[in-house]
Image (tube, rainbow, N blue to C red; front, top):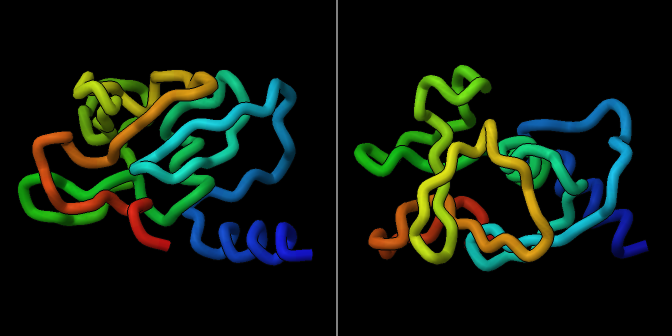
Length: 116
């Protein structure tokens, strides 16, 4: 019962709610240190937005971002790997075990997933 309540609470916080379940292997990855479930080959953007209200905060002013063009042209959806590599969330597929950050690693402030 706790799993169902947690899933419902996540849906209310999420920016994106799936209308139809996707086929694919269930995987886990971490976003700002928090383990989340995903479907293999979903985009990083879709995965993050199904688990929270925003993709990231703009590093120059702090405004919330959720992606813009959704095709890799606008550079609004940058996220980072734990190793510091920058990725476009809208065109990068998730993989099991990925460790992603929603702010550049050099920033000390936590990203949107760091606190519940």
